[in-house]
Length: 126
Image 1: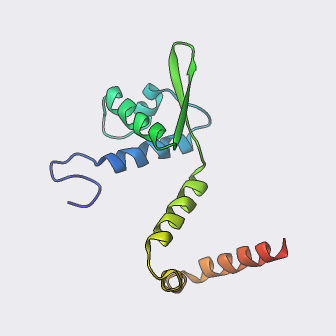
Image 2: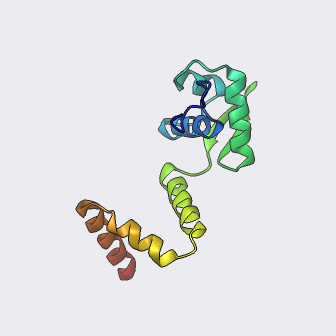
């Protein structure tokens, strides 16, 4: 088992949620469940996509509204905001914030380290 698929070959709910979010982030606008399903790999049933969308709505990661006779869906936040929230959540789980940040920084590539320094300098300049 590789963390993406369960031992029976099925994808985990978390992986399906990530796949749906990726489709929504890549879209130019709102999508119907059918449109989302057409862009997902693996030939899922539309009902499965609707179940995943319902979970994402409950988690306040996706919003929906009626358009004609069906619903359209869009992400609440862009991918960068979502990923940053995930990073903050992981950081908050550690008991030693300084150690976690130190390990994170020590693993940065030279390019990422330069980017981080630039971002911190820009923040100080405000």
